Amino acid sequence: MDRIYNGMPATDLGTEGWSKPWSGGNGGSCVEALRLGDGRVALRQSTDPGGPALIYTRHEMESFINGAKAGAADFLLAGSGAACD
Image 1: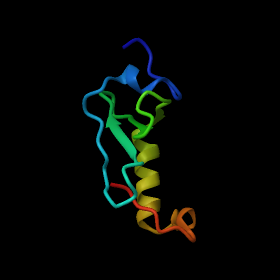
Image 2: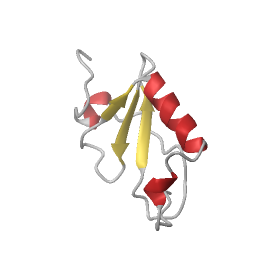
Image 3: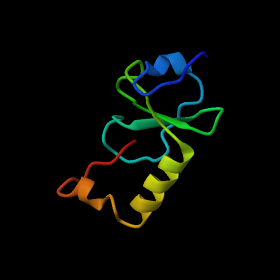
Image 4: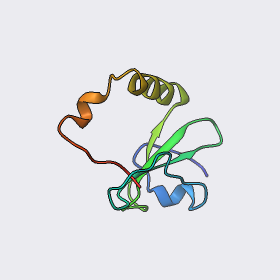
């Protein structure tokens, strides 16, 4: 692949290796993740697998995950009981 960039079609990253890193019960509308060869992480919406991929550095993902574990992202779920399959 010549260039990996934020917003590129997720299918340009291939169809193998995408996974749903957590599960729940909202009917399958989930975020899927793909670890790229250079350590970055691509995210896409499972209901739109050919849509745009968001590309994050390892440091960005580590900061987000650590913050979410510490409760810093709890405001995103205020009033919502949605979970992912």
